[in-house]
Length: 260
Image 1 (cartoon, one colour):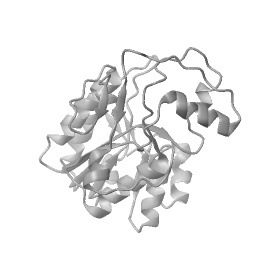
Image 2 (cartoon, one colour):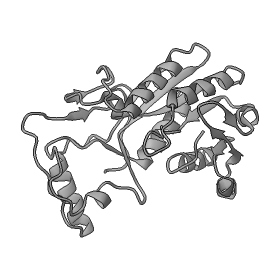
Image 3 (cartoon, rainbow, N blue to C red):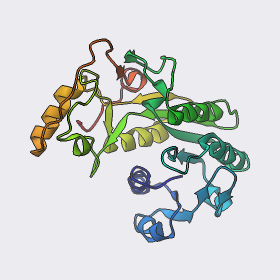
């Protein structure tokens, strides 16, 4: 559910692995793009009050549902993301789905400082973080299916990297804070591993174990790309949060594939 920057290549990978994949999009123009990858496309528009489109057909004979729909909480049209997820739950109860992967974000941790594992109590400070956490709890509390929640760090990959917007900027805050990013390739690999290895009922942080400050990392990245280096200020009173992918690395023995 949601075939965008992350969902489309994930769907293609699952097709390549031999799975029958249904994929949703809100745009008629993307139907051909999904079909060419082997994904069976469905145009579905999810709002706070109604699901438009053939949602029952989309869920027919589906055992595993991957929910990859980020909250839209910026700009003029702010939505109630929790209400949208409640609608998804209603249709799931009428379907054959027994397993769910809910794509979440490390933003649920808010401004917690120091090392952050899956055992750290989230303290979201943004509306997006609060609604994501509430939605996680909705799925986690359901006894009708097993849900694995994956809290991804900042997503990078083809045509997507923070240095492209940070290059040349001055007076950036918190230069000593840790970098918490994960590459698209690992996002896909983690979700495919969850399905193939049966990692259900789990909660995973998914951040590449870089252990570098923003100053050091973005200086290197700007130099590598021939861009003007951004200038950061250090926060001498706070360290920021360092997301640890504890359960993936130490429990599941997952090895991150792509260096960030």
